[in-house]
Image (spheres, rainbow, N blue to C red):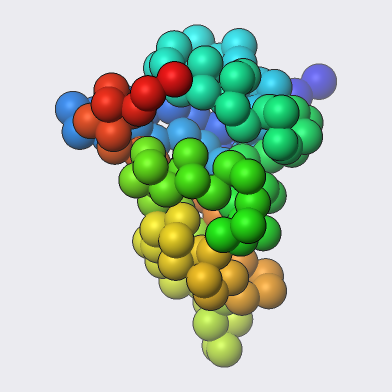
Length: 129
């Protein structure tokens, strides 16, 4: 039985200029998700999965991404942005939007939760397979 928590941060929203994807999707789930752009599914299948576990959640992967990661260049070329809830000293969380390059250069603090990623539709359209 699926609980509400199982679907938290599993969404796909396409706007004119960008696509937003919930960070709790695994790469395997993205391959069959209905609203994920076909070209992004192809990028995941051909270029990302060979270097990442297909059962890994996107947020988990990007939480620990480095410039040495084989997939860094792909996410960077797509102009991927990460939205994360970052813990504050008083126990509250603040939303923070960062690029993949910023995440690779300065990892998010312990206890942070990546909620979604977004990428440019123009960058996706121009991405060469």
